[in-house]
Amino acid sequence: MTFAGLNLSPWIVNQCNSMGLKTPTLIQQNCIPRILAGDDCIGCAKTGSGKTLAFALPVIQKLSEDPYGIFALILTPTRELAFQIADQFSAIGKSINLKKCVIVGGMDMVVQGLELSKHPHIVVATPGRLADHLESCDTFSLARIKFLVLDEADRLLGGHFDDQLKTIFNALPKQKQILLFSATMTDTLDKVKHIASGKVFMWESNDESGVATVKELDQRYVLCPNDVRDSFLIEVVRTFRSTNKDGSIMIFTDTCKNCQLLSMTLNDIGFQNVALHAMVKQRDRLTALSQFKSNHTKILIATDVASRGLDIPTVQLVINHIVPNVPKEYIHRVGRTARAGKDGMAVTLITPHDIKLLHAIEDTIGTKLTEYKVNDKEIVTIFTQVSVAKREAEMKLDETDFYEKRMINKRKKLILEGKDPDEIEEILERKLKKKNRRKLAENAYNADKCA
Image (cartoon, rainbow, N blue to C red):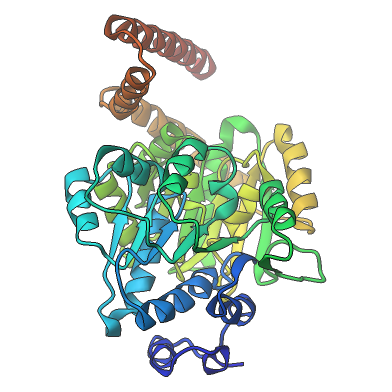
């Protein structure tokens, strides 16, 4: 099968060839002809299987036949994924002078409003910021869109974006093609499939092995005590680097604070890295991702904002510093490596308290993780250095305005809920006192442990 056999126009086939895309993947082979035929579509396939092009190619072809703006709306759960999708639309649509804009939080709303008023062909957006624009201005309309695409649909329809999606859907026309794509099938998508049975083309990867991750991915675990988790993490990086000098590494952790602390600690020890989490300004987030993608910095430490959809071919190792509570999030995290047929490794740090989570992940993905061997003697050697570096990072972080953005967002949320201004300050002050008491307790515990 070639792209020419999918009813795509010759100019699109040539554009794919110029980008090194010769053979369509299974999801592209099955979904593209049905989308071109006018069917709604639900596509579900493993990470790295080419889902973005499965909807981008037919949307661009239909746009070239009847160009106008705003022609298609693509919704994604994360900002970085929105920029990546927009770049792929630009690359394919370059020869037809395709115009796109990205509408995400953390960027200037006035500038975004001006871009929307120019009626670009493709709008790629996160639900929150697009809903803000719909509620605050009338310089653009979504009433004539031809396509609505939900990328990472399981996350978008999981309940976190319900209010924003309601605002957006109210602005859309009744007649449109709806395309839903995801790497993991959830109860929500399953309900959509059954409700729309007969009206929607549904394609799900039929893997007879029952394994939810790709066969090229080597999945390992390291069993470690909780108190020395960071030392084990560094030893895993050192062990991997002993045989692979150039491969990029993504490290996933649970919270913004842990992400920032881990980044500062590793930088202090000598492992140059960049951090990506919700408390980083959007411009800095894009800069960090650009440095990592260009291989200028070979380690990226992130929360789950980077777990979905990002395509970075150089990533050869994914480390779970903290085990995700939801098995499907594990699938998305480890899907950042071993993409498009390439090899990759994923190592998850497991404490005795995480055994049940490990078993849940293994049951979900349909395979068993094997142990990744590290040198315990080296961990004893570096433990003191790592502990001191992390403690210094904690003190530096306490001196910054790290939580300023979070407090601003909480204040905005309370204002929207109609709280009295004096009451808002009292609520925030109570939260701050509670956080300070917790911090004092942590410091006392650390002092006792060092003693």
